[in-house]
Amino acid sequence: TINIFPGLTAYFTSDTVCQGFATNLDGTLSTDTTDYWSWDFNLDGIEDANGNTVHHTFPNSGWNVITLTTYNYLTTDTCFDSMTDSIYVYANPNTEFTTDTVCFGEQTNFINLTENSIDADSMSYLWEFYDTVGGVVGTITSSMYEPLYEFVDAPGGWFTVSLTMTDTNLCYSTYTDSVLVAEVPTAIVSDTS
Image (cartoon, rainbow, N blue to C red; front, side, top):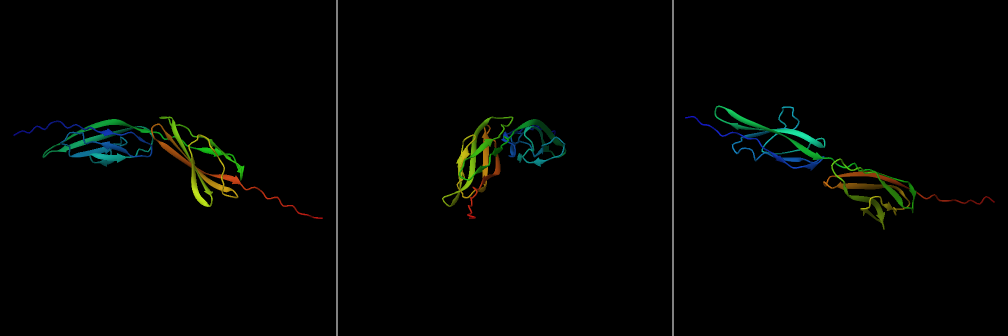
């Protein structure tokens, strides 16, 4: 008796994610006689993961070429097939800001230095100002591009501020820095007469 097995076909699908997140790779649409799925994420010929569904975080945004090799183990032979395709990873925006230094009681001007990624335009900004209001430490937020904010925690000092920018691909980046609000000097008058 001669048994002839149907051809083996490797096939996978993937989602497109933002840099820093895991790409979901699904090889379950390969031939149903597949016994083993071998994934190579950097074309070095070495298996990086195995299984019909895997997750991988690519170190860089842009195009990443991967290969799926599927195997069907027979009694006296092994059938295999490979599929190589490109996976795209969205770049994150580059979020940054600067400020001017003001005296306590004045508004700090926030200058947005955020740059869009190569893949998308900006969609929203979320500023978080960490301040003490009425004796309670809290977070005050703003969605303006370049807000003004007056810190109320007397007598001034260093305050933490975060800016998160989300783009049209829903990729985001957060930048956190300390902002100085100078204490108002106290004038001392001395009578030397």
